[in-house]
Image (cartoon, rainbow, N blue to C red):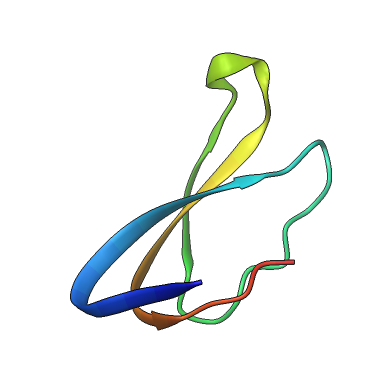
Amino acid sequence: MTIPYNTEAEIRVPAQGRPVNAPPGAVHVRDDTSGGADHQVYRARAGSYRFR
């Protein structure tokens, strides 16, 4: 995932009960279960990120 220069993004990663390996620079904001699915929400600044 690439976030354009001079922007921020809120990234919702499906967790499905498993831990998420977030890349450096991505900050965990909250856990979210709205919509019936488990997600972890991260905030990231411009750059490239790979979540596993």
